Length: 404
Image (cartoon, rainbow, N blue to C red; front, side, top):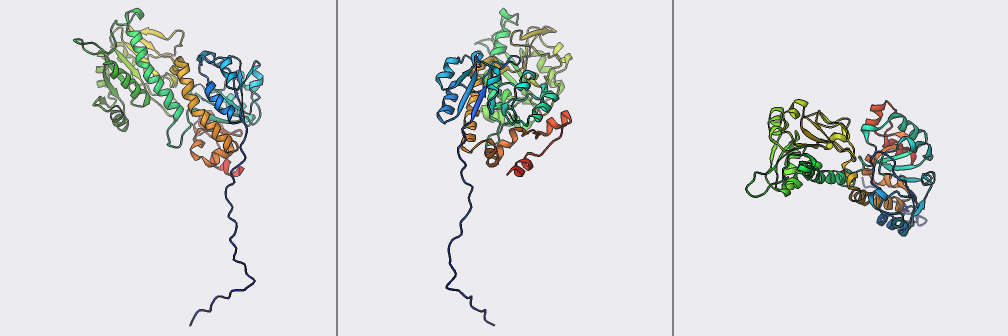
């Protein structure tokens, strides 16, 4: 049986239906505040005058607290010439809807925080306190953390830059403390013709380990690297492009190597909580007097049993004749370079948020940025923080979807 032919009425109009597209939102002019950091040993500033100049020429306004960039050698004059408004009252800078800090939110900041403010800062899991989070939740704050901020390639740009600085700095610090002037062993880090090279042990083959290894090799030292992650060891070999002595962390082998080394670097990272202790007190007691331990993992508790937190003012102490350098936040000692590195990540992010019509629209379109958000309009969206402080966890994706 043949199919009936479709009936076409002359009254029927074949016009294309309108397709609804995502309309490009109106560019949002943001007001960004940069307070002077009062936290322990924080010398960095999160936006440099050059970055401020770009933001201002794109229609945003920037308020900088008096002397905020001093420790990184950026003057108020540099900022005002870049188009920022210099503010002398701390309370005024906290009025800005977007706050950019290079240190975590501290106790003294709490009364100054505004309702529904957006804060971009580090969170330093190891020193975070529950009542600070609760107060921020009360004020419906949205928080983006440096540590978890991801770019579209899946890497963590600020953590990577800070790790590169710390890794490169480690060998400069070790060289300084090996010298006789600092009561070290009196050896030159590296070596010269006819003299055996200095021996450096690096525990951890992440970014810090890689950059420490690069610097040590460039100086001519003999480098041995320990890590339990074989992929990291392979990646480090490929990145450095030469054969290196590598090993998994086997205590007897590690103890044997530590006995004869001049420099030991702890570069073990931990995504959650404290870093494990890998080098015991007994291993340290068998090390050569005058050798140097630099524990970069001290930010998260340290991986040497003998490590204790020191400061940039008093960076070292000696135990079992071994010099220990355990300053947390090593990049802060190289504040200008570190500030430029942070600024390179945050300035394009702020520009993009402005173009998208605010951060809420930006995170709707850019899924990778959601990883950096630990609090969204007062709801805690970081699983580790909620577990650690027994606070209610809310899934960020559900929150964003419900707000659309």
